[in-house]
Amino acid sequence: MQLSRTTLGDLTVFVALARHGGFRKAALDLDVSASALSHAMRGLEARLGVRLINRNARSVTLTEAGEELLARLEAGFGEISEGLEALNRFRESPAGRLRINVLSDAARLVLGPVLAEYTRIHPDVHVEIIVQDEMVDIVAGGYDAGIRFGGRVPEDMIAMPIGPPLRWVMVASASYLEEKGMPANPEALRDHRCIGFRMGTGAIYRWELERGSEVLAMDLQWSIVVSETDVALSIARSGGGIVYCIADRVQPLLDDGSLREVLPDWSSEGEPFYIYYSSRRQQPEALRALVAMLRRGTSISD
Image (cartoon, rainbow, N blue to C red):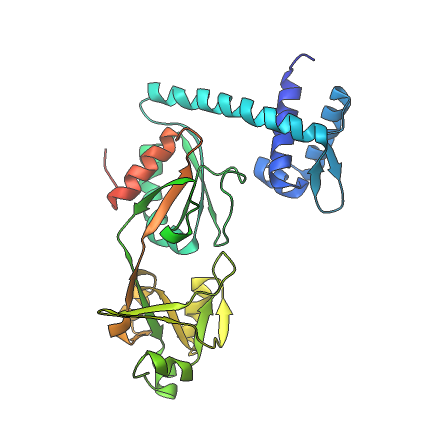
């Protein structure tokens, strides 16, 4: 059949629907209504004379025909995207859409501070930042890049550190320490209310403590387990217990006295944040410019 503008648009809908596995998420991605997507899919299937998807109340799965079409479309759309991206080499500044999936701590510490300058220098790049601590497949999710701790980056990705190694500290409020006392050593933490952190992988992070050549991994009896740093710090400020977190995230609260460092001799140094992207696709010029800015560690001027 002849490829019309309508069919091309509906094929784009089909790819988004296959990627997200449901009308609601695909509709949010494309910024249209779920009913509009459903209407487009029915029209596409009617014109092709083949059913492409199986619908149920909560999700969408592909038929055998849909799976075969998707494989060909992803290859074809990939070629089109790379062709359009190649045009950026002839522009003074890159253009297009840039989607980044990033940890909440990294969003605040390394990404947020440079975005204003980045968009000023590259006004034709439209940036979308998805802050998400859960591990995601950035390729399947349609992201150009992700930002995670170094040890969490999938092995088949190209990854580069952004920023120095991260210092991790334990902190608590003055009211909590007055109530329970300052622990004398790491083993004394077992007598305290400690706030655990569930990582994006689903595992609870063990506190890694260092003092010179001594290294300890503390698996404690957590009084509360959270999955977001802001929540943990809010609990700690209210006297809820001891939190283990990145020093830069908590430094303002240490400076104003809201929190105090616990066992400062046992702080530890961990891997920096890494920005990573697929090794199987061409790196967009817009992403190349952002990576360069992040790796400098400071914003740049014209």
